[in-house]
Length: 268
Image (cartoon, rainbow, N blue to C red; front, side):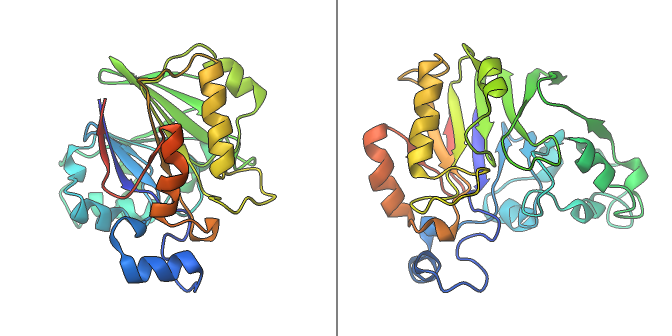
């Protein structure tokens, strides 16, 4: 299995649009891995995870072709992950209605949010998905699990299986007990885990900081979900986490955790 992190930034990316934070100014000056578009990924070139406002640029920069996608999986409806109007470009007058296009999978808020978003939206294939209810796409067995994030909707993370198993855990705080109970004993060959708060934890419970990532990974190990061969990589880094890419690498290296960056491709 392969996952490409096409975006690894938080809601406003890095550098943040108008911020003069230390991390934003550092990214503007040094660029490279410090530049982060809004978090998203592609699995095996065919499963897209989240379709936010940076998707067009990500496809151009990272040699990703949306025509290869068979499905778009949405985690939740925050604007950095969900830009429903952008899907108008999959339909007339931009392309023929006969063209193959991906289906979308999301919670009730996602599915309802498409209503009236563009003229041809009735031709979009939409699938309602719910926490802990598995479904299949081609040879992929996919299980949404409940993320501890936006509580007025069924916020999701994803377990994706096809010979190997991926846990995509972006936009969540430390899981609630029912989610830990569900994944207890499941094995993950790769875990993508968010690290929004970096070195600056906040009172908001819906994201993780560096220390919480360590606790999250330790809990996975305690539940026998990962072993020494499992790949662990971070994503969804925010400028106000006050951590540059290099500083994050220094922090996580002793824990054998990779720091994600835009364009990072992992094969496992």
